Length: 396
Ligand SMILES: Cc1cc2nc3c(=O)[nH]c(=O)nc-3n(C[C@H](O)[C@H](O)[C@H](O)COP(=O)(O)OP(=O)(O)OC[C@H]3O[C@@H](n4cnc5c(N)ncnc54)[C@H](O)[C@@H]3O)c2cc1C
Image 1 (cartoon, rainbow, N blue to C red):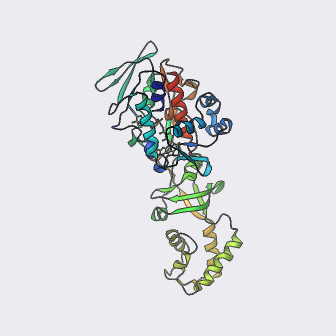
Image 2: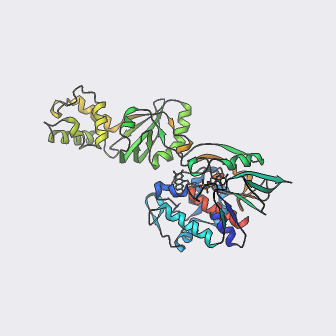
Image 3: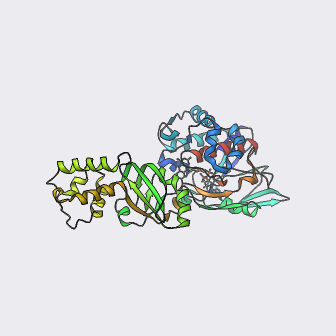
């Protein structure tokens, strides 16, 4: 949409072919329906450090359409933006749908001809150029072609990797897509049992073959398949590497700011206050209800109605240890269907990023998730879409 609207704004006659009955199906579900539209870092040098090896190739496109331009683009179209924690930017309305409406109105105003329910099935070439493209019923010809078919995550939104196959056929190298920014899978029964439980502040440490590897601090969400939250998504690339090496488990510290001694005192105070009550109920005062039940089970006290006063000093020490180190087996990553991003796409070396033009096919331009560019979650992906879409639209 950004590429089509930009080209049309520059006086080109533009046809946008969309496979779905509606445009922007993925855009509408971004950021849990809130759309993390960009990341507020106005210094390109700092911003681009988040794009790994692709950094040098991205200076030129970002000099043409930067984070500041994203703000101007949306705010000029009456969608004020709001900067939140970790520089993540959302529409003030907190609705991804409103971002979609801006894009839809943009292409309409610029006169883009949109054909819905029109999957492209083939790209035809002649003498090293694209000569035409086919849908089921029609053949279209144009001077330039922009492929913006996205990656392969959440295929129900329409991105099923069609573009990757076409580009391979056209001689491009396509890095095999694999899930990248993706939740973690745990088959531990208790994790599934407490699905929906959120921890607003904890520390998670990952181990490979019982050797400590790295820690992250922040929010955690237990799901019916394992663990999620922005922190987990961003850790998934490192965890994927550990999973290739050996057995991976994690330990969750529910009180990262409290050392064992202080936590023991805190627990003792709570237990003293509730001496004659059921231990299980008292644990609700220490942590979230469903998790407290799991912790109670982990204590293996044999009596489901054990009273607080029956807890030995040793049991209390075990309780404190569990609160600081809840063990979770990490069995893998979730698949492409649940990945926010896929690590894959057309090798950036084969694209002139000053124009987003293919170096192999002269009248072909590429944008967004088609490109193999690693980045974390936090608004960086959509910013790449706005930037590469604008540049492709300007030069196509
Ligand atoms: C659940 C989820 C949440 C996300 N949240 C965020 C976020 O908050 N912030 C962020 O920066 N990034 C987020 N992302 C990533 C972001 O959505 C993508 O980077 C972005 O949508 C990619 O845009 P694109 O235009 O390249 O491809 P897509 O958005 O995938 O669009 C591709 C379009 O091409 C169409 N198409 C495919 N094949 C054909 C064909 N053969 N013929 C015609 N049309 C075709 C599809 O139907 C689709 O409309 C999220 C991703 C997911 C899955």
